[in-house]
Length: 325
Image (cartoon, rainbow, N blue to C red):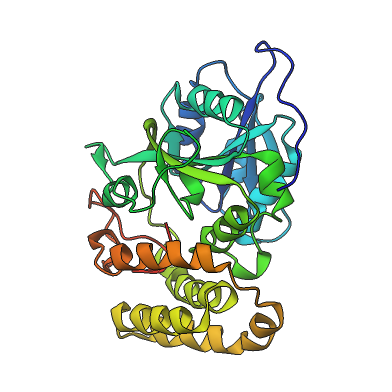
């Protein structure tokens, strides 16, 4: 586990920045930014735009206090790496253009990071839509079969939710951030395993709350990428018996569609580099993953649901059972 620079010397200095990732959401991003500007202490706000073409950048530029990073091309989740590099605080809270945090959430995250030096990720409880219904994935994370360790509050995770999580900047960047080859959709899984293997801890903390008002703008168009990524992650990090078992489960649960066939074809096309860079987890970590497999394979939160902007628990953009928590 890499060492990191000390936190800000004074509580008067910002400890945590908010990084918002956006792409073609001109009609949504203003509301999200308004909510972020209401956060306690007005933390630094960085928006990373993934080469939007619909006027999103023009909307963001109306906010003089926002640090805008406009990318020349869409690089998916790796744009969050750019946001973290731009941040000048020891901690970073990531969000998307349809998510925002409760006013005290970021200060709660920063306190947890200050108090627990091995903590790398804090994932928030998600309230969905105007009804503020709890996303079913929160119940699953809250029932993690993994025992807590080292007196760190919350529920033990081996992965996290990219758009509603805060990170220790040094740990995130030290692990390499998001792999650009994954683009977006289940991209947290590989990074989560690498953080845990490096000795960092990750927690789901229900007292930290985020809101998700799903736009569903880009969800269906990346479903095949989510399937590809879950297969790649299994092949890159899992021991072969478990990798094969999880591959079979993911394909069995995925809808019979062109998207699924496309995702499988994309996964197979990358097999050469996957095998070249395959580095399996330790037997101890694999044993923890097997415990989670039992929970994940019967998870209602991971069942395939077609996108529906009116539902209180939206279908995840990375398809059915394709993310390790």
